[in-house]
Image (cartoon, rainbow, N blue to C red; front, top):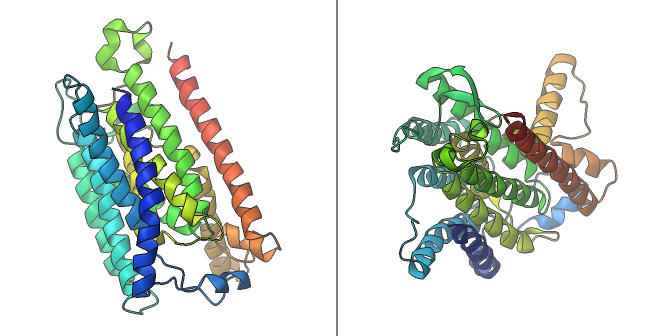
Length: 364
């Protein structure tokens, strides 16, 4: 069963390494270049015209890698159970749906030459439709143990507390999806920053999925400590998706790192945020994602603080928000900001996985 995870990661990596240059040529031929804000750091002016909408590459690669890994697994072992699961399909659907909203935004911004892209209400409506559809469907499709892809309980490293009910769950899921999507979107301001950070978080979720599969309550009879088991519907399939995303983003990073040959655009950032939220919801680690994706949270909070401070006092806390541009305006080079922010994200992942393991150990 673990072969699926390896196959998905390798295929995702290969497809974006090979496919992204082809997408770059196609987008460059059509003149689909990046719009650069005039009030940003001066060094960014040279990026104007760089092909964008690169998220198409890793969205496509992830979906193909997921299904191809299953086909190869069954081919090598006809007795293997490698059928797609509802949890997996829902996360892929959320990723693709959010990516479609981002694509429409990019298309209008770049092709139609309307700098603001989709109007705010239309963009929000698209995100709400995709998010509500995911949240409602995630409470359906129980397996033989009665487990659905998502739970109406709030979770940290596992579900805890009382059920909040389906209506509040939809609201909570929407908040997570919008928060993570916009968090990745705000982080995607420097070459490779959001892509590299996402690789780390998807790597963490690959580990989480494998661990939850090994310690699943479905195998409680064979576990040394059944009290610490996980009530997650399809943990292994979530690990396959996380591995495919990790590989696809890693291959894309080869072309997206400084100096970037292509940007992911809203197509990619909204899709990655949706995938992160979907993995967190379906793996019952909803609050843990705030730590595993700590860099996205930090950068989002910098915007909240900047806007809040300016509206209440008329003063700015940072020279420019999001946070990465503040350090650029202080004189840090783009590569220096990216590497140091990657280090911060790496620390967040290590601490998050440490708490995840500690939660399991404490349940003994």
